[in-house]
Length: 389
Ligand code: AP5
Ligand code: MG
Image 1 (cartoon, rainbow, N blue to C red):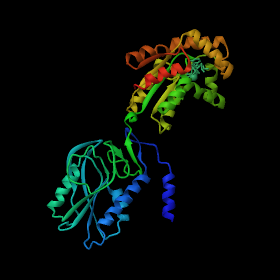
Image 2 (cartoon, rainbow, N blue to C red):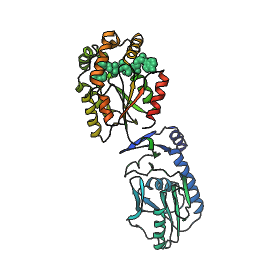
Image 3 (tube, protein in one colour):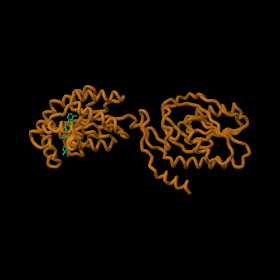
Image 4 (cartoon, rainbow, N blue to C red):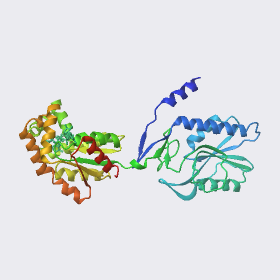
């Protein structure tokens, strides 16, 4: 009864959609409930084949990957059996090396005994075939192969697999005992390498005041699972909260000038450290000076990353006026309040921010779309561009 309730609760417990191991992101592939069901079915078949047996078969656990599977399977076996472990390896990183090395010998004599080899995964079959040969050398009377996962597309051998939990496509997976460079074994669900998203992306959304940076950053962040950082928004929050930083920034912002580089650099550094579970970051309003651009490059280099692209939305100065004056009627931002302030922001943009265009063009990172047209039209242009990165 309780077992059933636990199973029911587990089924509806949502697993993590994505996990990150070192430099790679993996997405949910096989939820635990499916794994458990497959193990139930495999165990039922093994129990049926061993019904009434009088010998004591050896369950040979191939370490480390099949440790979790063997443990789950053993609990379901209803005949007398002995557990033996062996360690073989054919993986280095995410590609199979084709080499099979025996790392740890048999801990039991299998002469004249029936052996059920328990594997977490069979792909090319190199490991399992070598092992079957070794067991024959050790005079096992019968060798059966049981694997939780099987990649039929990758299998190159003709040795028959007796018990297969789940057949899967030829992809790199982790979890439920399977690893990426020795980590990830502990997850109870199985995850597959997320090819689109294994490296964090860092975008800058660029453009003059009122170009639509904030508008399109929101849509981009949602579509590409990015954390949107608007330095303008962060500063306005500081002002609203009446912090010391906010008090310093208020006068400068309301005059259309920039706040000091070190203030925004500190804020950005903090955001990079605290945010998890995203595919990357989208910087809106940063960098705004060549100095900030250089600091950003250094910050990314320190974490082994680099800027993916600068997505620039370009509109002429007269459109800046129209857009901001329209927004002033809705949002009431202090720096939208007068023509003088807006003009000052435009001048500041040309003097201090525009030089970044040449800076990023030189690095091949600058990509411009026209900001003229409806919001939907501009968004389409941006998505079409960002889909290529
Ligand atoms: P910040 O908040 O970044 O202001 P900004 O760069 O002037 O840009 P805006 O937020 O005004 O415009 P936006 O491009 O986001 O356009 P939006 O989507 O809202 O910075 C504010 C201040 O903070 C700075 O002046 C500075 O003092 C300080 N600061 C910030 N970062 C700093 C840094 N790194 N270093 C130093 N100081 C810093 O769109 C505008 C309006 O147009 C909206 O109403 C929108 O609905 C509308 N709209 C958008 N697209 C369209 C379209 N295609 N058609 C019609 N309407 C549209
Ligand atoms: Mg904005």
